[in-house]
Image (cartoon, rainbow, N blue to C red; front, side, top):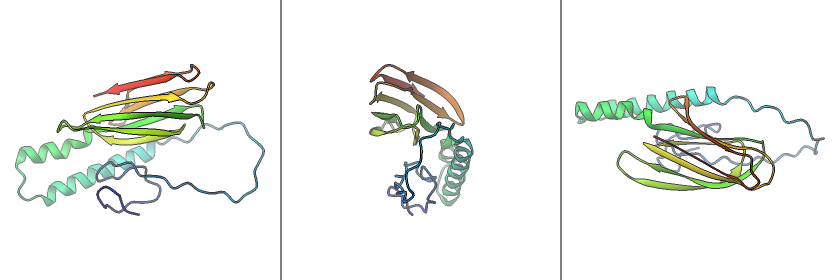
Length: 174
């Protein structure tokens, strides 16, 4: 599989391109097994190891790209080397399966602004490379919890949560 944005080689279990941080569309899987009895929801497995692997790959590819640029000035090289500091993970958590709609907006160091509409179910995560991130989501159900966590450099920098019927949560960070 290859990134639709930059063409980099991707693995099926990656959630974002390690070269350009573009989120990867996950292909839905179809189950052929018979339906089972509903069970008590289990706590989802931690995605922290995947985050650190993605961050390490992003740093590796960024560093490799810098080495390949023979004409870069020292200040350009330093700036590109530490660009991984601007990688955010937008984590949507709460009641498993809760539908949500909304969007996230990013602003890059170059001043470019991009808004991405979102329509999904909890849990979900999106990897973006930006100086500023803002996410606004609305529950599409009366019950349940919807929480937005913005993670930068492996730590949570901002969170927002709603339990209100059809409630909205907004989180922003630099």
